[in-house]
Figure (cartoon, rainbow, N blue to C red):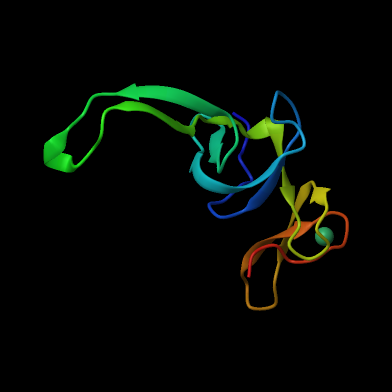
Length: 108
Ligand SMILES: [Zn+2]
């Protein structure tokens, strides 16, 4: 199984599909499925039933569907480009992800 190098709140860029080139924030990572949900990416329409008890109006709502983690790439917070992810052990023993392009630390 391929490891997912993404984390919640990461900024990512979409590599394939109809949202190709779009950037968004990772809302959720499903590591066991190798998938992630990215804000405003891969929107699908869902028909919902009204539920007055929960104050939910019925109708069509748009929400994000998961996309495969291999279809997105991390956007480095330091240099702002999409990059592959490397790893590095810091002086204090923390393992962090780094940008392969600028060597900047992705995890603060
Ligand atoms: Zn970078």
